Image (tube, rainbow, N blue to C red):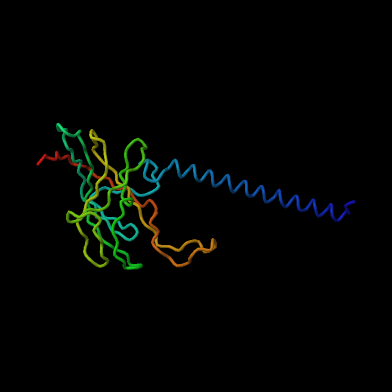
Length: 210
């Protein structure tokens, strides 16, 4: 038979468990609400209420270890031929510079750092990387001047727009969470975070078959 002390101890333990359970449920509800707010205000996807800044080109932004000086955009169309269907691509031009003062390491621009942001909430489209001096994935050396480059994005053959939006991802220089047993030494995280959106008015070019 349980003693009075055992009964009291059990009651106290039960109250503590319920109190902590209530706190965890409140915390979980707050996380869910925050996730919904972030989804609705949405990074790149919605111009109204966007949670990151939007700039009009020409403009220069520093994102992570790279600096982008955006200048222009072109919709380049390839007409239909007897052997191939009509095609189109979006090319965005910028001056690219390595500003990695943390490690001063040479780096090529990853294609995922620039993303075409379609209208109507469609998924963003990654670029193919940076083409500089007619060469894809040119290594950017810290300390050198900016190089003229462009990035390509896949678009439908009939795509048209008065303005295009390009999302910029910034890599983060930080350490992993030491509480999880990870390395405390900071490094560049390639997943990055949404940094800004650049709006450009594209011109249209027809690519002639040579």
